[in-house]
Amino acid sequence: MAQPPRSLGRVRERTVHRCGECGATHPRWAGKCAQCGAWNSLREEEVRRPTGRSTAAPGWAGRADAAASTVALADVPLDGGAPRPTGLAELDRSLAGGLVPGSVTLVGGEPGVGKSTLLLQLAAAWAGRGGSALIVAAEESAEQVRRRAERLGAAVPGVSIVATTSLPAALEAAERAEPDLLVVDSIQAIADPAVGAGGGSVSQMRECAAALVHFAKSRRVATVLVGHVTKDGALAGPKVLEHLVDTVCSFDGERHHALRILTVAKHRFGPTGELGVFEMTEHGLDGVGDPSRLLLGDRRSGVAGSVVVPVLEGRRPILVELQALVARSPLPTPRRTVQGIPPGRLALALAVLEQRAGCSLATMDVFASVVGGVKVAEPAIDLALGLALVSAATGVPLGADLVACGEVGLAGELRQVVHTERRLMEAGRLGFVRACVPPSAPDPPPGMSVVRVATLADAVAALGLTRGRARGHGQAADRPAAAPRVAE
Ligand code: TYD
Ligand code: MG
Image (cartoon, rainbow, N blue to C red; front, side, top):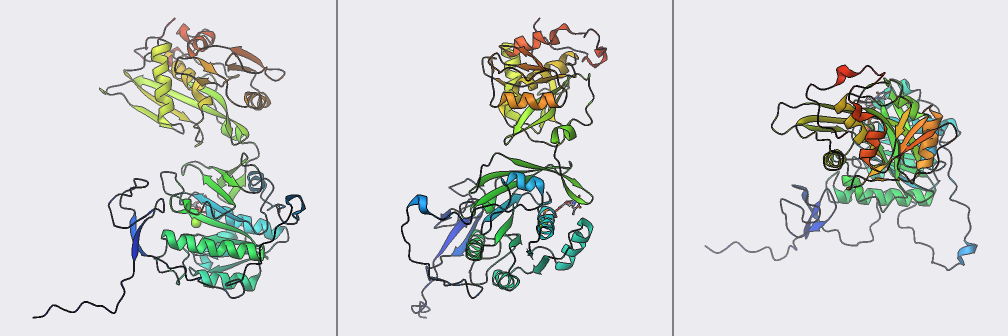
């Protein structure tokens, strides 16, 4: 029997394997992406030839770009870039004023954090200020969105919705509705049938985002795209869109806590330091103008292991309570559990305490957390963490009127952190009158005294934590049965 003829007439489509995490392409499938190391993330897709494709809505597609002309930089007209306030104060704060017409903003966050809620409220607030908003609901039905909007008081005139997962349909609807705010929820759920790859793939996302960016720019529609982020925090899929859009926001919060924080990682229209703070309530997201007060609301003073530290979230100082608990461990390898702080910071604090301050917690279970579901990674918490650990170990509470802020070096020395002055001002505003700081820290605001200390060991001694039973605090019962060695 003759061999079956080869299909000479059919040219095989060339395919590549694209990583769903980082977008890197590989000629062959592999279990692990050689670029980012993600496992099982490669998906086969067709190579798209540069066909000068024109998808979707008529009118914008295939538009020939105007011939590029040269202009003196100083003569470039400044008629577009002004942000338009959205009506949500905390959002405007993080976006340095509001949304710029024609700009594209990507809002990333874990599923369930409240992105759809935020953007529904944004649409309503926008409409409340005379704007018109169109929501492209690609994940929920129009009815579902309406039900939620009723609860949030967001079913208001000026907000319309189109429930579709098709990009051309969405763009057509936007062409007709002519909104000045377009919300696409989410960029992973929307697809362009003209793109061969499956929905949610990196190429789909990129093509759809590019088309939406084009639409936003040509129609001067402020556009917001929702992007789901994987648990490990990377803007995973949507990461590949970051260069396409003007603004990249991240909406974060612990699922079991009400606090939500909107940070801006990239912003073409202003500084990125500001952040917005929200509280998730039963009637949606409330802006929190004074997060420090909210976070310290339930604090009990006089408890060993608790230290207040002014951290900087973006450019905004916020006071958070750091808590440590130290208990005798039944395990050969005692537990180290953190919440809201990187494990590395706890490991560093424990090592410095042992090696530089003579306080060993090697046989103890150690728990350290930031109260309220806030995540703090900056080194400014080092001093407070060290103090909280010693306080927890000795059972001696720190004064309720004290804040601590400083970085701890490997030699146990304390270093000043950025914007110490602003942090102390915030502490002063909330009634704290003493601050433990490194020697070079600036003078405190009026009404506040500082305890300047050169090392973590000095701080422990200066604050009376080595005295064991605290005079006048009555916290001796907090002392662990086997008190750790603490250098006097
Ligand atoms: P959602 O906006 O759907 O999250 P995402 O779009 O980021 O996936 O919000 C999800 C959670 O928010 C949901 O689990 C319930 C909670 N929630 C409230 O607590 N109060 C509210 O008013 C709303 C609308 C949601
Ligand atoms: Mg959603």
